[in-house]
Image 1 (tube, one colour):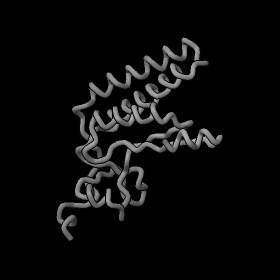
Image 2 (cartoon, one colour; image 1 turned 135 degrees about the vertical axis):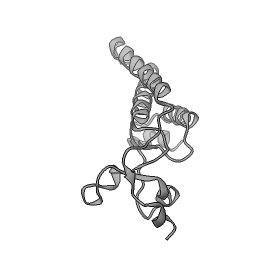
Image 3 (cartoon, helix red, strand yellow; image 1 turned 45 degrees about the vertical axis):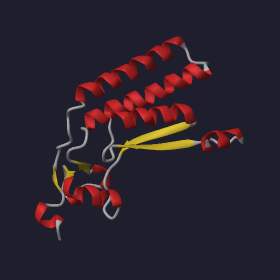
Length: 153
């Protein structure tokens, strides 16, 4: 694994995890957590994918891109995709992912107080329960950026 090789030579390794791509489900999120546990990066950051015009991802979801603000007042980060899991779901998924990986690191590397481990465990469980409770919610905030008549031109 490249992460371990970098760390072997004293180079810190980081990962950037993007959630929310098409066809991503619970199984893929679980696989991502397992990958993070195995890879054990020094740091990882998460964000929910957002469509950027001109990218293959934007082309794939163009007819479902939503915005809550007018184009003058927004950036690409303000865009979301109708029909995918809700922002609340991804907030819980991120809470679970970050806490679960940190708990694994605490268990394998030690040096973490019992109080901190209990807090990580509780946050991981809250994240998973929140995911279960919001699993049926779909993104629908805002209005379509590309109107149906424009999508075919």
